[in-house]
Image (cartoon, rainbow, N blue to C red; front, top):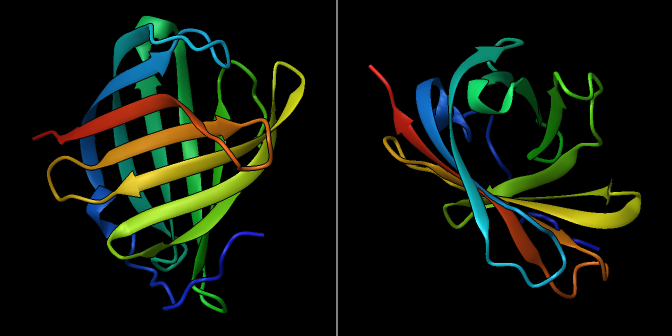
Amino acid sequence: MDARPETIGSATDFDFLIGDWSIRNQRLKHRFVGSDEWDEFPATSRVRKLLQDTANIDEMDVPEKGFAGLTLRLFNPRDGSWSLHWADSRSNCLFPPVIGHFDGGKGIFYGDDTDDGVPVRVRFLWTPSPEKPLWAQAFSKDGGETWETNWLMEFTKRG
């Protein structure tokens, strides 16, 4: 079980991400085989608030890879957690959410999904910054005992 937050979160936790961004993506080419070969590609995104500032949506365009995606982030004021929901134009479905909170200046979010039909635990790590926030995705096949980071995004403010 993932630890509960010691301090309650805030609907402003993701305010650092509101605006227009250029993104440097690095995605691991082969997961769970010990690979250190990364595919690098650009993207852009626009993030705006919704639902009386208790949610935000991130619309991402990845023309080099031929897809677009979005993340809907919803704040739960009852427990201070956020649920992050991803969809993209390749799958046209909403993936299972990752849920978590910010603590000690970082956001950590967990969920369950599959990778090529194999169940995996998913972890998102957010490092907030007004100019260069970072996001990292990792998968675990052993219930969270070990993690392999497979996607990194470095955001740079546009305009």
